[in-house]
Length: 373
Image (cartoon, rainbow, N blue to C red; front, side):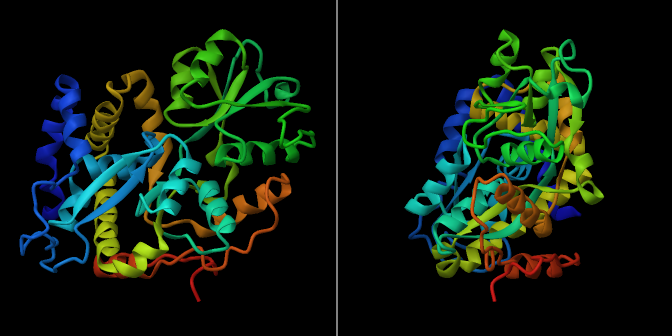
């Protein structure tokens, strides 16, 4: 795969630079890759395939989480930028789904990496007018970790305080569904009941665990492994609850307006994500280092080896949006009385993704009957 392997050279520079010059990297990242290209240049919008693209820039949102590995590595290695040529990538880091959806709705974001619950909520609240899911990105990477002195079995969770990142977010919905299947009762609004569900920002959760204000957490990576490094134990990997051990944790979404006006740019981004996922699968150790370098560039320091080493293998990047599992997660939210039964018809438009996959000699993926008619 010569086209993919050429990205290995900037990887070494990225890792070294992240350790030695994080401020410089942050400054460069904020400018966007390819920012030196001027829109008035005739070649400014020419993509890797030689075609001139319709937009001078594309604003891409993501979270500084390992579950957004496609974005982290694709941006760090320039794999997405390379497919766009002179169309400049403008990366934007977000800490929560609602703020990313707000940016998409407000026109300050074009494409985003985001979890299934914010995707569903954003689509339903706009009555199907603001976004489309155009690709998968990651599966897995979510664990229930607990204080082993207080909780030794799953039944021991009754009466304990367990954190989730946010009311109605993907992990919160999954945990509420798990509680219901145990036959226990919890009020979805307050989080009070047979288990106390404590909605806590992932950045705060490790301190809350150390202070004893929570007894465990149902959280994505790297928060789960950070808690384990602080003395928690893994009690359950959510992957084990799903058929074939796969469930969507991160989607790629796009503003419907941007998709309509700039399908060529969206297609180029998807070529970049597909090549990024292929590169990650083929170069696991280098990809892990690349993701960590991007986290360092965004946050000022890399993850410790005792956190990233166990976290990385628990998730898998994928082009497949695993659409059937998104529908299941929507059903969980309905059962938890967090949302009304949604009409998700049209939430997916996998036309461009399947075009890219077919051109790359890969199998096309399904929208599980939830695609644009």
